[in-house]
Length: 549
Ligand code: TEU
Image 1: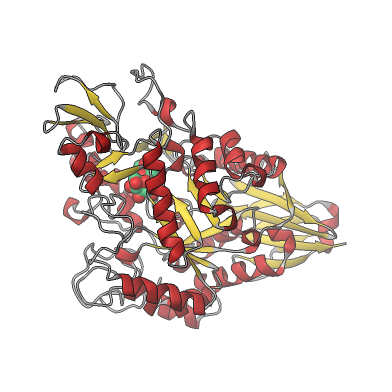
Image 2 (image 1 turned 135 degrees about the horizontal axis):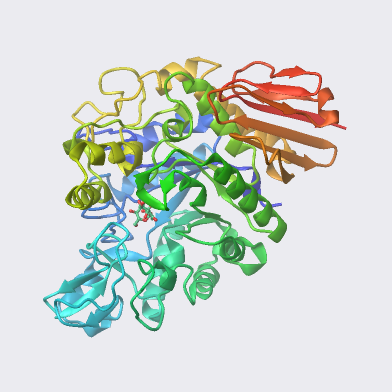
């Protein structure tokens, strides 16, 4: 079985991780400084989000040179040192390839604007009057997905920010350029890659208005996406690498195809359906309490579906685009530790490769910013204006940002309880979160009962117990409210995991055999309460029982 089945990945957002040179911005040497901390977690890879030269409109997801280091983050020598030092600790780096689009500051785009036809074909430039975009598609960050470039009298496509122009993958020259980027980093010793929104790279041949949506149905999992990924993987020898694709608004059927080993595409995929259960009508900016029944159904469909078809999930609650899970699905006040641990075990004991986003392992909470000036994210600021101009009050819009802004996860990593949290000696580029300061690495590293220690245990358990990495999965108690429970099985071992997502007690009746099971892990750090065949779960309790027959 593939090694990544028992491995775990730690995501570092360098801008907010550790500032080594006192300019208020985290950097590569800051990551190197903290490698021992990461090693102590027991992870195998660090997914490093973009550090390439960039105007930073979208914090580095607007790349202007794929084969260099932005001076904001350091030098190529710093990158090589990080690679070397990580390797010495048995950790690989997973680099983030933002291949759906480049920054408009990239040389290719600049030469396109200067009129070079060859580079115009690297993007989607379309003729049209300055007041008539080619289609009515919407950008994911708000507004039209087309921008008019007066320099050439044409429109160009940007599914994200206006400074993130979509690349034309139908042009073989573009595909060759991108293969060379992979080869460049392979030459530096990189063996793992994440591909940003890679299921959006194949655009349709015909450009048409979307009369029922924002255009995504025309380019999501687009017509030649599998072909393009297969070619990239084949021509760069990525079949030997660990790869993960970020799939936006994808389907289970496509993720099976992306990740089935015989298709020779990717090792695993991120999908987001489980992180939309608190979107009212599917709209990120409309709040509703999480629909836990739907969450359970989604996990069941994706877990059992991928297992049945031979695909592989990347498991995650948090990343640099998502609010903090303990604030979102847990209770970051009264049941802070219990709920953070329950959420961790619910995810880590499933089938797939777990990803931990910096600070998640400490139980860091949302930012709770109360001033618009504190927000940095281009999407948040755009949507503040879109929502406010639609007639919502300032307070209402601020409440939505507090719940949904991507900046919730981008506040500085909390290394200690000092005023700057040990992130930087200078004023940080984004304010510290207003959540609890006990969520810090120094305090938690000392405490065997901390959230951090719990994550360490989960990561090592996956390596120690094949039932976690390779076992089959079946969901239990479909009718229990606010409970997600499942059973993993391999050979003689059966693992039962039951998680209470509510602030009240829940009682489940155990399968008979489980009265003889032993407690493996519990978010209350004590044996769960079992009375005959009744398992009583306390508020936000997660319990794992192991049965060996
Ligand atoms: O994210 C893609 C993506 O789908 C999200 O940005 C999502 O659209 C957003 O959270 C809106 O709710 C990737 C990166 O992870 C993100 O940081 C980049 O901004 C984006 O691609 C563009 O490169």
